[in-house]
Length: 220
Image 1 (cartoon, rainbow, N blue to C red):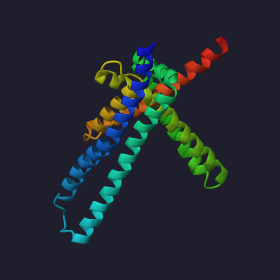
Image 2: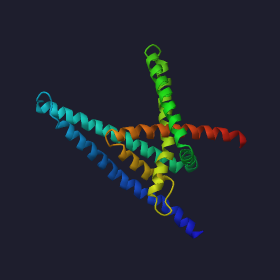
Image 3: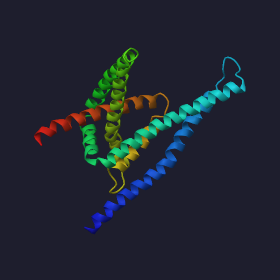
Image 4: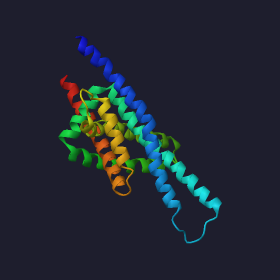
């Protein structure tokens, strides 16, 4: 009994230390990698010699882009970790879905992304004539993002299992897997393809887990 209490109190403490370390290290690594690419891009020879002001504007734009990428990646990881910590049962269900049907998860997510994107764009176009439709489009977009983050708890968790040490599990797996995947997606070309695959799997896993939950409700 005493051992289980110690373990219960130690896991949140370990997760807190990991979150603190990640909050310091992850942004620094992401910004360093993107800044390295930005410097290399700015150093490329141009057809015309750019004045210093134009180079400064280019670097400022790339810095804003780096901050934007950092916020998206950090937000995805933070959202997945939060969901995993608050709803461990749901997070485990998503992880089991990813482990059992990875291909189905990916192709369902790809279909959802294409169909959902088409609907959002169509509604956005209609909102020019009917402003109220724009709210529906925004709500649908937010729902797709939320469903993707929900599914990413399973994708990140599966990857994080490979870095598990001892009794650490749950949100700790999601944190480690999320950091590893998001850093890997910074690799040019291959990383961008991996990012698309991860997002599709997240959306597909979230959809399948949600459908399986609704199927279980009448039986309960």
